[in-house]
Image (cartoon, rainbow, N blue to C red; front, side, top):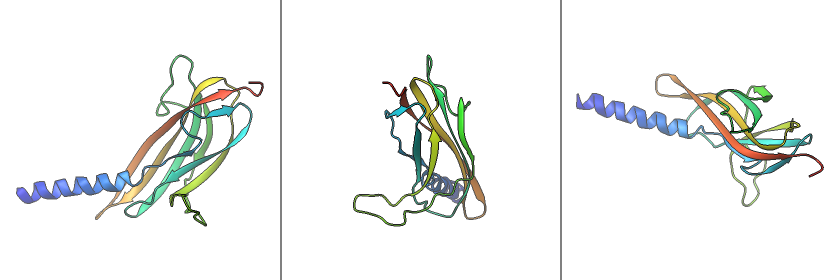
Amino acid sequence: MKNIVSCTILALLALTGSSLAQEAHFAYPLHGDTLVAGSNISIRIDRPTPSGPVVEAAIGLGMSACSSSCPSPETSFEYLFYAGSFNPQPPAQISSGEDFNAFQNFTIEVPSISGPAILGFLHSSFGEGASAFYPYFESVNITVNVVSVSQ
């Protein structure tokens, strides 16, 4: 019985560690940044180096205006910019002060909305465990402020 409990705890710790290493995040824009409606911007999503083998599945990137409150990207996106494969690549060269995270850039046109908005992505991948591949899902969002060109 002790062995079963020990093995279970060890397996949970291993899975937690491998899933934490898969967490992606916005490198830019950053939470609180101001974006200009109608402009093209580059969005960089970083994925730190995982502690074990990972198979990337997909990513969906979108935005929703925050009218009275900000909606969850787990529910819906008012604007869907990208839905497809996620293939983060390590930087070709690393300068002093830069990170080593693999990343993928997406260029989008900021929608013609005004005020606070949620910029978010849904990411899925599979981490390889000792005997199987384990699914990993995450929803990441930041709040940005969208202004018109005249502001």
